[in-house]
Length: 187
Length: 354
Image (tube, rainbow over all chains, first blue to last red; front, side, top):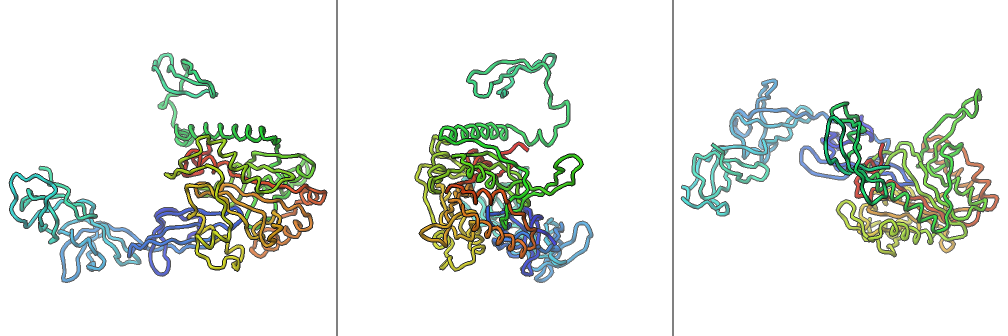
């Protein structure tokens, strides 16, 4: 069990049957009142953020969470099969767990998977990926404007917006947090 | 005291030519340092890492502020006094825990328990009872178990007392003092410009719970619950751009204050909030010895219920009240937090050297 004095940023706890991480905390002690620690907690499964006060003397339950680096191998029906990079174990991860991250998955991509009590609950792809355009309308020569865009299908199957001058077969850089085109891969 | 302002020239065979300025002097001097401690000579300690230029600047400002505070009170006719830090009784407040100490009062004698003060209040009142007139002190105080961004177990308290005066006078004292320290009348703290122009808004405790926390009938809550709700749902939502006096606390939350004559369920107590920080706490002081003794015993009983140690009663303090302490107003103000706001420091650790 953790004491309120153990509370710090990124401390992970189990509460209401879910894993939470401490985003912010503050020791509060009114001059004439009882002390407590005010925390902002993020649910590691859903991302929901809540505020919670812990009175001095209250205990917090540690949680079994672990981040593992794993490589995406192949898609098996509705599941995505990953391989743990240190144990070489292979295991399926559902679309529900991957969420939006599945848009960017290509074979052999390394991801961070968060395990809660032995089961994967979230997957994080790298913030920036380099990926090939598998289909787009032909380039408009001479138009180097970044503002006008067109749809492009990338190797993971997702559709992204790219500038008009970008050609099919080009490897482009994408920010997976926003889905935005960041440029062409430098040669 | 000299402050190094910059290195003008480097000559490893002799030393560094540096510009220094005597604290308070306007013209810098050029001085050659014959022996310098070069960064590569010895490993830097945690002290060297902590005491960077930003902290030194805040420590200089802290020293200036302390000096200006003394000038303010001396000009106002107050006497600066020293009170003991090591005492036989540190009060009975339920939620304030003193640090314990052991003392051998003289060679060969058995060791006796002592406490470090949590406030100089009880000693100050003994001086008032002996006809001190208006007094102030800058004292180190100690509170066990209090540590956080706005708390250190050892901190500096400014207290001042006005005999034969009302606690409302202390509100204008606060306005005058802080405006004297900040002639510009405005200070920027964690991204907010605080307007210090008096008079500062006054907000009764229950009204704050109603209008800010949305509690329908706060006077029906227990005093402890009301204070917890205040700390949780009111404190952070006070206007950060104005200092605010919270007034009219329930009497249960002010064991050393006297009741308001017009509303005896409320205490003559206010707190000053500045930049979201609880900065000062003031009372119209309770001077009735019997009532005070009863409140101390009640507090000890409550301590017992919470599994906390009983505190010895301060009989010297109670005797001072019984001897006829004049009706007085007194206030305690946290110096470290004041320096935080006036130097735009977001942590109390950024305004102390150690």
